[in-house]
Length: 402
Image (cartoon, rainbow, N blue to C red; front, top):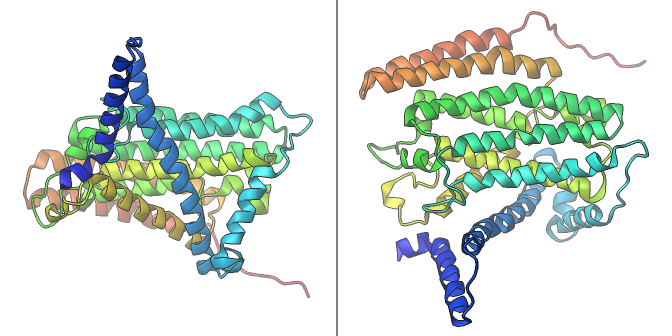
């Protein structure tokens, strides 16, 4: 019973394929050889195209209601029954608002940019394992595919800013590119530590490497010194890659109005909004796969719960972390943003690679915890203290008009 519930979606796909094959035989139709693999791909991708946009809608409601509570705002919680009229109004506005394109804009590029951004966000889901035997494309280089395809989002952001023929949009795009390139380095290097330990780029095999329960805690990489630091750096870099608070400088309304999508309205603007959340789900899913055991249960006694349920439970926990961060932390300045990436996170993640190597070659025992942990903590103390105690920044004073 437990196994059948765990594999219910895999079984359903095989049943549909078998039923289609039997139907074609009954009709005495000989389909071309490429048709059944194509149907299999469609059946694998269809749930992704339905589940994650639905999760986007749910997350939007939860985030705005949560931020409304944190920041004491009325709309999301008090307009209409349970505040839902606020979301209904915003959704209707996004669908029917007039699509205005600047006269001097490159209309083709202006139209393509949000489309590419959404397609890129959807494509990376193909290699994420959502449960046992639940991956659309089990590639040997799945991690490489994820980062290679995800890099196209930077091109789409620049296309949106450049094609608008607006200086604020172009400035926002350049800010976004500088930020995304800077933080993509620690994002990728934090993942390299996992590749070093497992010896594979396959996301399925990385999950399998964390499926054991040797002690009280599961053998997830986050429960090691290098894994905990790698996961922390990964999540900070992911937040910056998504341009979410406190790293939302490309959309700094107090400085450049709305950043690279200032000239977008209506459904095109909604596509930017959708791509941000799809990318957040994808990066959260990758963090779960690399550091939090993927679809594995935290304890062997809980293996009766379906693997896909564990994956989405962890995903919801990380989504809550993103929402909590957005409602709590203030926006950084541009110099603080770049200093954090180049003077702290990149050196820290390089040290973390050495800590992972020490963990691997030291062998089981307390010595690996001592050497790897001491290196990580020592590097954090040496690199972090100078960055957060800058002598160039004086005490802030406020002056008010008489």
